[in-house]
Length: 76
Image 1 (cartoon, rainbow, N blue to C red):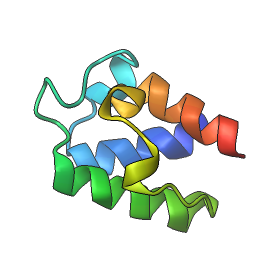
Image 2: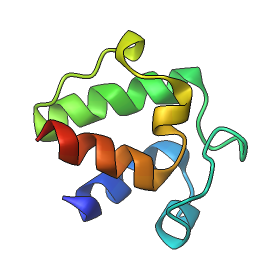
Image 3: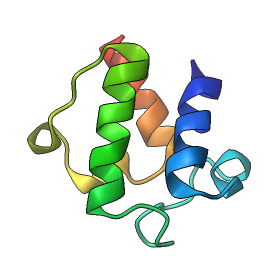
Image 4: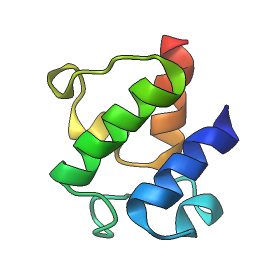
């Protein structure tokens, strides 16, 4: 599951650094913006069948690959 999340992030962020540093702040590094975040939520729904509304999560809840993985694990 972790590998699938990292594949999604690498594709959306267009950078493989998401694999190297799981605590990288994706927003501060300009790898993720609001549009890419929405794209990520759609990809998570398609890949895992987990629906996450943008209003359900704070930006701080999904700012790193590790936090995104943990969120998906908690919803599985």
